[in-house]
Image: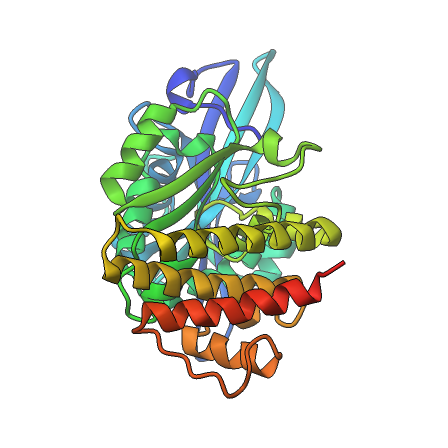
Length: 390
């Protein structure tokens, strides 16, 4: 899906139109019934609230405004869930051929208040709530999009499971940016999510961004990242790069990085790595882990021998990379899955490694001693070399 940059486009005149709107859902927690708010137009067709994007708006801001205008639902009763899709079509009006791009988002109504028809809208005849099944039957256009939007709505609780309030605030800011239409997905992943859920302040914020348009303003995007994240560690791909036949790599990491990204949280857009992970080449996946294991050997040994860093820094560094080394061994040898390891503490990973025979069960682990951590590393190193000896 290639989305143009809105501030470079004619958004409102004959020829090409750019508009935005959204599916508004409400869940009755007592009956578990899902409702959808729709608008009936002058042709008696039911569709979503939508309208032209003004020059000063992002597509999300436009959708909020149109929903408030056409349904009478105020912004404080709406929760933005996620972007759904772009619907592109053409039509004739007054003998002129027109093309349209409709940016569709998904919203949650906090309460099922009475909908109010927009008095100034002559093309609008009626507004109403429908059960989801009835909405599927009555909607004139965008039925496939409605089904997709329902899937997005059903997954809406995931962000609430992440305890870092910064992500919530940044997400709201992100939706207002002009460059947002050039973003396919904006993913937060790795230890910054895991540590937040453990109540630990992350050392940095791991970010993966996939852009769908090469006209995107990368300087503006970079400014947003550095203004809103502490110690951002980010990478930006273009969608055609990700979908090409080139072997996918991350900075210093092989194809297994797809698994990291696929298990991250997308602040915006569909996480395209979820589908890519399903078709990953398992042989290349294992090989990339083995390459990383060898790199960890060198990293840990070099830091242990270093004289330029403090004792405390070396201890923390070796502790961190010994655990990463164990994770890669467990994944490469299929002794554990990524999801199994995702929320384990370092002590639990050590116990799993003991159970798998990577570490002797009688080994005493002391994370406060650099020398004892290095002895643990030597034990792990010996296990790997014995497993892969010629």
